Amino acid sequence: MKIVFATNNAHKLSEVKAVLGDDFELVTLKEVGITEDIPETGSTLDENASIKARYVYDRTGLDCFADDTGLEVEALNGAPGVRSARYATDGHDFAANNRKLLHELEGKENRRARFRTVISLIRGGEEVQVEGIVNGHIALSESGSEGFGYDPLFVPEGYDRCFAEMSADEKNAISHRGRAVAALVQVLKS
Ligand code: IMP
Image (cartoon, rainbow, N blue to C red):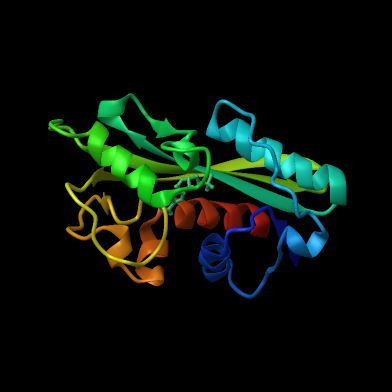
């Protein structure tokens, strides 16, 4: 089954491919001729996932899905949340975002955080949303070189290593995106 995944992030694409398996052929934005950045003007993850999926559906008429992810830190009242990509700067500057997060948490005892992914699926014109959550905490310093974004700082519950110290398979099995995609597969197969 062919389905458009509204992303240009190669890391995400390979993570989602691994969970979806061979029953689905993932088509990228580039492959359907969408080269511009899709505006993320929503104020919640749910809104942004929906905006992105609708953008693709309106232009292609193809079955598609889009995800939006945020890191929600308890002591920061849920920040960076929907602004996770643009926390420190306007661009996707992962290193600057991680530095800012460490700075904001300096001296704070509560370092609990969670990643939340919302996926909007549009199939036959009908929209369905699913989500995936992983709880954890923010480490005192960065470690590891795998993954992307906040992976060098996020330690999932029950582990003493952060996502950036895990293989892609290990991360996918427990991650917010892995869980959201597993829920997506349930919907796609139903
Ligand atoms: P997006 O909505 O999926 O593009 O995610 C927004 C931002 O959240 C990204 O730019 C990253 O900073 C962060 N992020 C999303 N997923 C992950 C992940 O799996 N690990 C680490 N950071 C992530």
